[in-house]
Amino acid sequence: MVLLVLAVIVQRNLFAVVVLAGVYSFLMATVLVALDAVDVAMTEAAVGAGISTVLFLGALYLTRGDETRPLKRTWTALPVAIGVGGALVYGTLGLPAFSDPAAPIHTHVVPRYLAGAVRETGVPNVVTAVLASYRGYDTLGETTVIFTAAFGVLALIGRRGRRGRRPER
Amino acid sequence: MMERVILRVVVKLLAPFILLFALYVQFHGDYGPGGGFQAGVIFGATFVVYALIFGTVTTRRVIPGWVPRWMMVGGLLLYAGTGIAGIVLGGTYLDYSVLARVPTQGQHLGIALIELGVGMTVAGAVTAIFLAFAARER
Image (cartoon, rainbow over the protein chains, first blue to last red):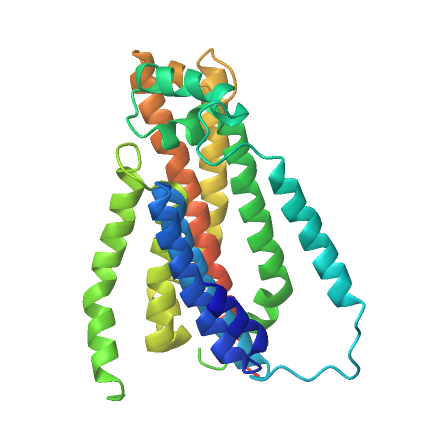
């Protein structure tokens, strides 16, 4: 995966970048399966590797296939990127160890959900129970975000594409 | 018209199965991995693949432009409406336990309805965005 990321950085042909990013998403999906997050893995494989690759290719068709070389190189970006990355890595040092059962995330509401989900909702998949029932407001908000985002995109590119060229019928 | 015969035949053969798999992910989300979001993406991907092979003109005959838009609207309204149904039946907003006589059955029904709402919205969004993109010309 590291090799893929380096290839994405070095590569100037955007078609290759899009394909490599799709491969990266598929590898990410396998990592998520290994972490037992099957729902997220499905989303990653379908959205990250499938839909967004196709949308990028569609955008490439509308633009040009090669990254233009920057007019002048700015070196301030490098220390900023390294600084932010270093700060983020430093932040992860404060996190509890991976799969530590005493971590706050496992002791706050999770025991309550795991103990009560099947009895209270009758849904064996706890992920679905939490997502749809306990966290129903959040999911409603997410759906609204998707809806709003899609309508924003349609408002920007949908109308002209439809009305501007409609000689077919 | 006879170009890319293999792709055309394969897509024609696979499309119903992809749709069926999307519905399986949708309605089996209570028991296995998956749910509305994943199902919506897979459902929308069917039309994306179809449009990639057969072009947007043919795809618009299969699914006219207003269908995904109204799917988006309908999905969100179904979700919000399920919440309001909870209020009407004497509970709080998005409380599914009151939707049926047995609380767990109400939860089942409510979760299925809102997952369907999510799925419709996502499928509509994916399809509509891709068709809008693909219909543009350089």
